[in-house]
Structure formats: structure tokens, C-alpha cells
Image (cartoon, rainbow, N blue to C red; front, side, top):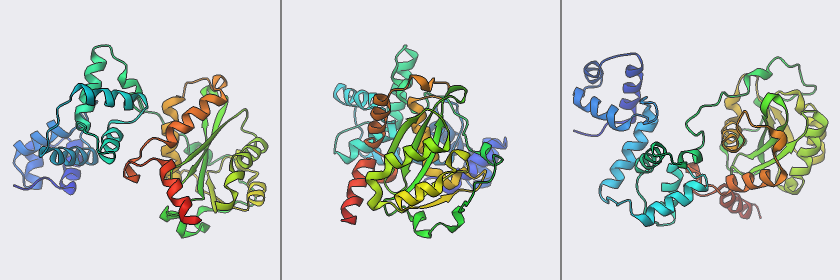
Length: 320
């Protein structure tokens, strides 16, 4: 019998969420209930026992890839895993990084098992995971009613080439807000490379945002093409930014955070270091620089586990 397909896994996830039994699910997709039972047991999320199709497909693919070469979790491999965890690599990034560098490594699942086992013993490795097992509510939909920005140009007018994420210089910007809405971090994300520029700001006044944006981006001016932001009034001075940097400025639609998906995801990474309840008044410039460097040197799955800095350098050479 062939392996389950991603389509079948989506069917399993949907039917499971609707409360169907394993026998019924098996009948719907033409598989024995024992196959469904084994699939749910092996490929559900270990943290909450929820079955997710994409996660299940990833776990199954990795397990299949590793069948031919079973690697023991030696002390040497464990030391490397711990070192990379302390650099805030996710288990998936650890496996991808080791594969790219031709280092021996155990599976993603084995690393997670190691982390949760360590936590049960009072260990701290789990604290290096992106959300530390917690979920954060997304900021974004609250901005639709904050007034119309003068001379706003909507994202529907943005060149289609931006969607391809092939050229550097197409940016997404946003604010990561501190505890009690006091203090914020301005984040700038290059869509093609994932490279982050970040700075602490003392207020959300549009003048300060304008000045900080120009300060951060002036050295990139020769390669800049577009900026996309949400509709927050802090970005009201967009025309001045556009004129000084000689860049086209666009606004996403209200309540459509997915139109700036790369930046939304990056803000989630930033939250790993500066959580929602963190007092941003305590953040130093040195901390901001340290986190920026960490994220820019952390391998990303979408780049074949190369870092944003590596991709940026590659694309910069192509521009020369």
C-alpha cells in the first residue's frame, strides 16, 4: 500500500476536526482504520495532540528520508543540537542546517522529544523555541478604523514583480508594540532575502517613524524599489519617505495582514526575544542589534536553510 498523500492528510485533518471516528475516516479515504490510527499517533502535534496536515506530511517525509540511514543521538550530535538550540534555531532549522553543512544529525522529531524530555526534568532548552509553547494573538486588524491616510496608494497598484520575491529592495514595514502599548520596535523586512533592519522608537508619532525609516534605509537607497505598510497613522509621512529615498510606497488593505505575510512572520520571530508583555523601555540598542544579527544569520527553510544574510549577499552580487 502506498504512503498517504498530502491531499489525504488534509482530508484526515478536516474529518478529525469534525469528530469522525477513525473507521469513518478510513472509509472516506479508502484506508483501513489501523492506517488512520497509526497516522494520528505518529504525526500529530506532540504538544497538543492536534493533527495538522502540513505538519504530518513534513514529519512523514523526514521519517521516510531517514529510514535508509538511522543515526544514533550521540553525545557529539547532542552537543551540536544544544549549541544550535542556544542560538535559537528551531529543530527543523537544526536538521536543515546540518544537512546543508554535511553534519550528521538526528530527526526533527528526535530533537523535539529531547527538548520535551529535558523540560520534564526541569531543563530549559524549550525556552529557545520560537513561542516557548505559547501562542500570540496577531496585531493587525485593529487598524482599519484609524482614519484615512492622505495620498494613500493601495497595494493593488503595486508592481506584480514584487509578488515574485526575486529582487532585493521590496520592503515590508511594521511596528512591534510593547507592554501597555508603550514603546515599539520598527521592523523592516526585505521580501526577497528576509533580511531584517530593526530599531527601537520612543513614540509612534509619524515624524519619528519617518526619521527612523530614512536613517535605517539610507545605505540601501541605490537598491530600493518599494515599501509596503499597513494603514497605521504612524506611517502618515509616507510621501516624505518616498521622496527622500526615491522609493514607491504602498498600503495594504485593512484587515488583510496576509498581504504583508513576510513581515507578519518576521514579527513573530522578533516576539521570541521581546514578548508581548515585555517592557520595551528596558530594551537597549545593543539588544536590538544582537537580535537583528541573530535573525539575519538564522537559517530559513524557504532558502534551503541558508540565512537571510547569505541570500541577500547572493542577490546583491546579481545586482552588481
